[in-house]
Image: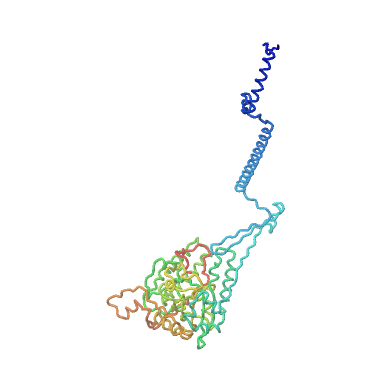
Length: 507
């Protein structure tokens, strides 16, 4: 007998229990049965590895802190740059040693380069006494042009020339550069040198390069021909009481409008020149100022000279008639050339043709201009080339206008314009250089007509409306008139002028 948990069992009972336990174990092994305890043990979660989790968390935290510091540094750097830039914009500039360069363009088109050079110095009280411590140096640079002489150079701006004038290539083979081309640029440079200290008054770049060439040619019979290639500026001068008895008050009272042209002829009628009234008013104003006790001595001297000039001009207008730029076609040649005795020098009244694109315009040399510029024609010509032309707007800015003048071709007797006669004479002269393939332009009379009184004789009616297509006989005698010329530079009063300008100069 033995006991299990306080119960007494026999040896036989114990053996039976062991056998039952052995059979139950075999069944479990055979059929894979698991006990509830094993089932519960399998479903339980695995044990957590706290060591590995702590290392991963530390690594992630370090990476986040690194990225945060990096972004913060970038933001601080950008903010510092923006603050520095803002301070630089607000802080006055303090130049350091070295050079500061700036290039701008003046009103007259000249590029103007300035350079401020800064060097270290001593104390201000010492530098104030040194002339070189604060000084300026100015240098104007320009290139003197060469004249065009070959056909290839001429057609660069005027490609129609060989077509219009088949004989031109042969003439160019013996052509010579005119001395007046060099004289023109000598005069330009002299003027620039004189005006260099007044930068905005200096001759503009456009007006410096206004002439492509001046050549001396000869006709088939050896006669001289003056050839010039240039732009075209506008002249609006001239007056003639016989053909234009009335002019706008703005012109009559203008201190810039010139009633005279170099080409003039004896007056044919008793109708006064309309410009006389304005000049008489200017004399009255000058005499009034001259009599005032407060007028300075130098001003009085200028007024006396001006009164003398105005009185001479009035006498000239009483006995001579002049071209009218608004109605008559003519060109302008520098006055120094008109006065030259050279056989190639044009004179007032010489016949000329103007070539632009594929058209040829007959004209005469009508006036003398400044010695430092070329390429000028009357307002009538300018408007024919460009309808938008005016006294303040040139018709052709490029160097595309050719001027052919025939020196010595002027008529022996000066008389009122005869447009058809001018055209025929120019056509004859062109034949002497090989002719032209284009018909010359026919100018029409644009002068206003004034109705003649009903009791006028035909002779009196003609005096009231002299035709530019017919020449009238000169009176039996006329007193000599003072010569009129165009000065290179106008005389300026020493102080304020009694003649306020009503309009800008015509050229």
